[in-house]
Image 1: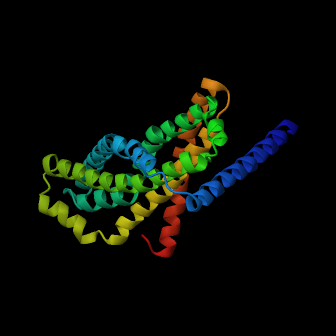
Image 2: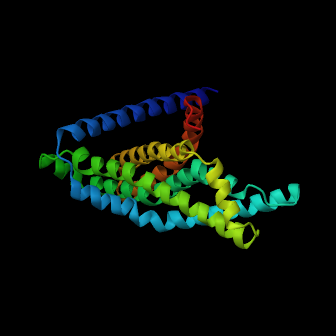
Image 3: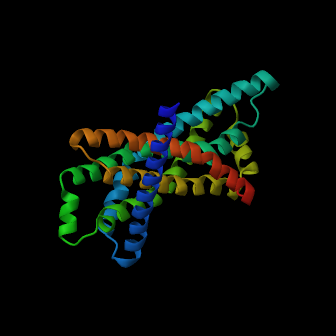
Length: 262
């Protein structure tokens, strides 16, 4: 019992310490965002790495997710009503409001988030961050701000593409496999889908982008121990980002319901 409470106390102290370090990092990002000139070239380079290079994987994942969703929905409704009903409505709402932002965030966290952590961590291990301090350049200005902006700009755009591709995946299955006319599928979507449904998923992606950027940058800055430390922190970055995305997804959805963004 004594050991349990000792571990609990140590974990609590570690959590408070982490929250404090993250707060100081965010403070530095906000301060330098308004005090310095933006590194536009670096922002574009990071946007390409984070957004464009992840586009193929994001579209592939969401396309087949839409296909599976349409297939399962179609056969389930056939068993209940002897007819595939409201396939477009179910696929559209599920993809736009939930699956597209969450799956896109998970893919980006696993691909781009890990790369950001490894890149910043390698720079710290090889003392390049110390060199930036020596040259009078704050790492938050040159390293963190471009990556934050790139994540916040590209992830919502990827989510929009993912939503469209996911709906197209459902359309292919409903047309070819289930025999649902294309007019019926698209009519189900446009009849019930509203702007608030699109904003629900779009705004979620902004929160997810901030979470992934914060975890990736923090884990990169906290790396120690050489190559082994880079490997460990990269793994922790991906796992932590994915867990936070899934956990916060519920609370963000609940908050949107309360304010009417449903």
